[in-house]
Every structure is written in structure tokens, then in C-alpha cells.
Length: 307
Image (cartoon, rainbow, N blue to C red; front, side, top):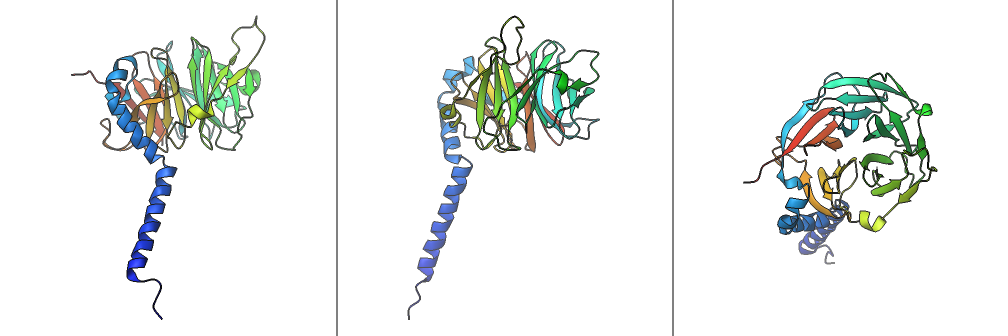
């Protein structure tokens, strides 16, 4: 009896299987959408370059500098324009960490009553918001020169039960001071960027009212596998979204559409090695980008002058 699986049929079956697996991988990693975006980024460069952050123009100036003095990994990053320094958090032994703009440890402040701090955002002079990822808490804290510890129980808090998924909760924060909007990134399953109005509560003479804006259709256009950190740029009104798993920083315009990107892979933007696990991104008043990655590595990207 003739064998059903002839060499030709076997080769065709294997080829079909390989194509199916490639298709699944492309869908999983959003390769089709990412490829289309690269084409659109190139086509619309002239339109956006002068009215956006425009990430393709950035090159690394400090690469993978170890943050000395820390044993726990840092997560998230925010720039303090009053102190001209950076703040981050650790979550194994919860601490608030202040860093210089060249990645040196300035001070560390214990966080009491914080289960899993994952993000921190500067709001105004001495005021910050910290997220507790697992419990989906937003915690308003105060920090000054004399602060030696911060107790969550003594701080204003907001708990949100939005798409609870264990360790895939609130991973990034950004703040729009003019619009008084707090952007909150849900890490994945699914990726989301929420806009929260009314927190932190800064007007004691007004009632405490919170409004949450969710736009799943907008967020579906984000072809990243996760979100690790956010940064709002008040000059352009654009948002930076950092994805560790996609090794990418995306610039989103006011409508939430990706318009430019910064790849964190080896050989891109002057990187000698790829960024291993990006956890936080921040931007200073001069437009310089700062990034932290596990295991406690510090990066600076600066915009290059055009020819």
C-alpha cells in the first residue's frame, strides 16, 4: 500500500506548520503593526519633527552605568524640576531613592506600609504619587529635605479595581500639570493607559471627586507587549510609553497615536548593547531622556543637533 506521507507531502506539511508558527509569533509580537508603524514614521517625519519629541534624533550618552550602593532593583523614574534630580522606588525592601542626573545615589527613604511600589511621579514641589501595583493603590506622598521615612497610612490614597490581574497592575505614571491629569499605565493583559482626574486632591476647598477615562480602542493601537513606564511632555502635549518586552520607547500624540520611537536594541541610537530590562523613563526640562533598567543600570539619551 502506498504511503500517504510522501516526501513531497511531508515537506509541504512542515512548511505549512512553520508558516503557521511564524504567523502566530508575528501576531503575538505585533510584528505586522510594528512594521507598518516604521513605514509611517519614515513617511511622516517631516510633518512631526518640529512639533514633537521625535525620538529618532536621540543618541545614548551614558550607557548601562551601574547605580552604586543599591542591592534591590529599581523600578520607574521621575524628574524633579525643583531639586534637579531623579526619583525611583524599590519594591523588595520598599524605598524611595533619589538619584543625581548622572546616576549617583543621593539618598534613600524607607517606605512603610507599601506592599509593592512600582511607579513614582512628580506632581508639584514636594508632592509625588506612588503606585502599589498589586493593590492598585495610588498614594500621594510628601518629601522634603527632612524626610526620613514615608508611611502610607498617613498619606492620601485612592484604590481602583480596574481589570485586576495580580502582578500585572499599575506599572507606570505620568502627570499633566496644566490639565491636572494623572496617566496610569496597566502593565498588560491587556495594556491600558487610564486618565485620572481629581487625584491627587490638591484643592481642599473643593469636594474630592475622581473621574477615570478609559479608551480601549485607542490603547489597542499600541503594538507593545507591555508597559513599564510613562512620561508626559508638557511642551508637545505628548506621552512617552516604555515597553520592556518590546524593547521600545514610543511617543504618542495627543490622540494616543504612536508617531515616533526609540529602540532599545543593540546597535540602535548608539547602544553598544541592548537594554536588558527597562523599568523607568523620565525627561528633564532640557529634553534629555533618562532610563533605568534592571539590574540597576542607568542610561541617558540626548537629542542630537540636525545637520
